[in-house]
Amino acid sequence: MENQQHIKELLSKPSLSDEEWLEARHNGLGATDIAVLSGLHPFRKPSAVYADKRRLLETEENYHMWWGKREEPLIMERFSYETGHSLIPVLNRNFTHHEFAWAMATPDAFLSDITAGVECKSVSISQRYRWGESWSDVVPEEYFIQCQWDMFVTGLDLWYLVAKMDRELYYYVIQRKPTLIEKLFNRGREFWYRYIEGDELPPPDESDDFKALMDVLYPESTQDDLPAQPNDYDLMEKYGVAKKEYDRASDEINKIKNTFRSIIGEHTGIAFPDAGRISWTGGEKRRTVSYSSAFDTLVKLLREKGIAVPDELVLQAIRENTVEKAGTRSIRLSNVKLDKLKEA
Image (cartoon, rainbow, N blue to C red):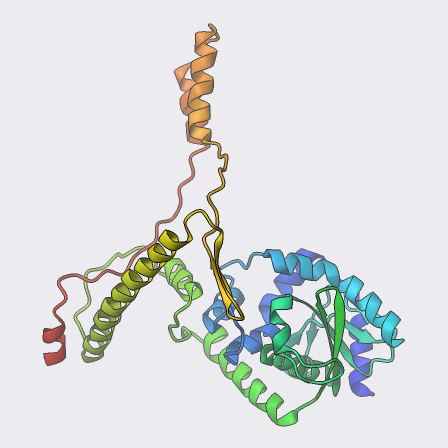
């Protein structure tokens, strides 16, 4: 009852604007963040969570996020129609744990009697194999983790996960797992106090997010070379060996691709019965506009027609449309001798 009352109080507050809602999410770890910190998110890494909470990089809404947000009301409406459950949409409200303010959740809805939460997902049909039958709890691990975190934050013991796949809805029932929630809590707490409120950087990973984070934190080199430390020799050797293997693999991949191109020729691809296909796509003509050339042509045409275009106006237009973009630093090997590194 206490948890239900807490939820009712939060639902009674006005919903936030999109900008306010997104800003508030910087102040804690949500369900998706916890899935990332558990190593189960298919695209994001902990460094992306760090950059987001520290407001170092902006997270742009992609195509799938745009559609997912707009399909939520339709999914909830159909869920109510097919199950008979009335829902209370959350509508841009962030929920925080009653004791740990950094633990946040952004559910899509609650049942009207506040006995369970609801999460809606728009899923590509290509991912159907990761989902079990309706009314089971067989769902992708990252979504199972998200539901557990939502239950931790809200205090509820039951969560419905509704997945729209190829115009059909599939319903999943997720029960609270206290042991798992404890592990998620410990992981989230360590990350929050160590990296967000603390002064440490998360460990390096292979993602573009970490590279972008480094570019923001260290956009320029302002000091001379560091002297190599013992661990640096091992790292340099690993990099040199991996780079050679990568180059060899890239050459082999390019050779195979070119062989396929020579086989496919004017066809669209090669079909492998029961094993997929490989295609050689593209080739269609595309039109693009070179605005700098168009500007030069416009000035030229105006002058040919006797319309004076002063040089100072041309220079002013150029100045007002010149944008300075930050450069990026690159890692490069120089005069590397792997045998010397091994000796060191």
